[in-house]
Image (cartoon, rainbow, N blue to C red; front, side, top):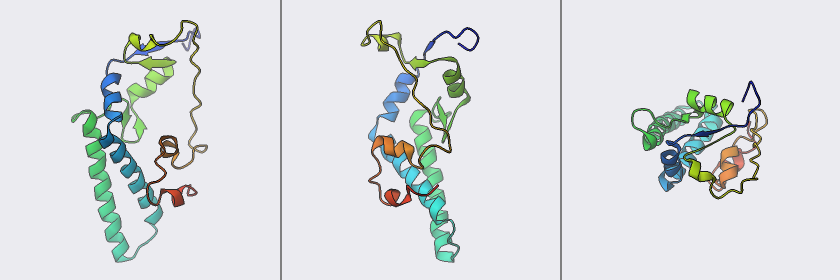
Length: 153
């Protein structure tokens, strides 16, 4: 793709397992609460009284436990092949750099017409994305405290 401008697709069989995990209620709840805890920690870290510090420590501990639980939903040893906590893995970055789209199986294309064109989605840069972009997209903004945190950057 980089050298000749070819349009490419990748077959990643592990994607089927990853997709099943991502579509579970447990994963959705864990990820939503993880994002909420992260937002609470970011917002409340300015409070330095002993009671607030205790609450922050509890939240940090809960956040670390939740990160481990979320990772273990994919694979207890390695987690997701696409993400390490909040960041894409090396594999994921290479995959996105060298292929225009990826799928679990070639049969994923069966529902598309032969003349169908896949257009790339715009990936927001860090300074362009709203704080809770992933939750805005999934409709999770009803989580307590998240609505009032959307203006924080």
